[in-house]
Image (tube, rainbow, N blue to C red; front, side, top):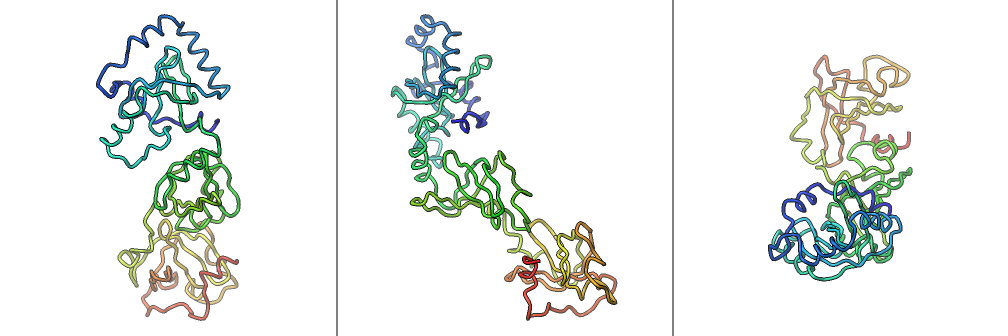
Length: 328
């Protein structure tokens, strides 16, 4: 219940309510029945009942008296209320304008059990939700039926832990694994996400039986490695920030989600005990591109070659330094 109360309603819905407040036949918002109800029921008392109903969470039987492009108009104790389309059950978000109009118009004159989620007498706002009226089990079942892999959905981060973050999609939680937060390095999910944060997520996969939903943030953006060969080439000088220094070298963020490795042998001339004697996390450096391998998602960089050219080389094949970095 509380999640629905706190949800930010889109301003477009209210604009639709004010600018296009007509029923499906084009009649004005008012009706003889509504006007009579307003005359016979004190408006102030009606608003007080609305506030009490919102606090109690009790379901309210309402009559649908009209619709517009934003949702449904309802009559409740002489007050005009609104049900945003996003709070209706079984209304597909993929309908075109005409299909949406037909679906909404079909509900006019019917009665619905709704829950009040916002009451603001000063703004003349009385907002209802069909989704909030569902039981937790019914809400989960309805939401699972709506979700499909490849969809984008909005949600709220409910919990952040070492392996990822849980997101409430409106009555059902999904998990963003730490590997799906960003194309770049994420040391802990808490560095990128916070509890209560509103996010847009990508639906990766569903398991209706287990009620599990795998989510992703990074798949909402292009993979930077896909076109890396078109942007970077051997011999190019690039600027980046050192993100991690390990025993065999240093990783440099070239752009969001794209890191290159400066092997210890390419940090500087001469001998030194540890790469941290040359660079530290947070340093901004200019590096020479030694090699680019988009298939293996690797870029070899050099600091010592920035002042003079040399024949590029590949990192030693016997060791997977990118994998080693995860264990240091």
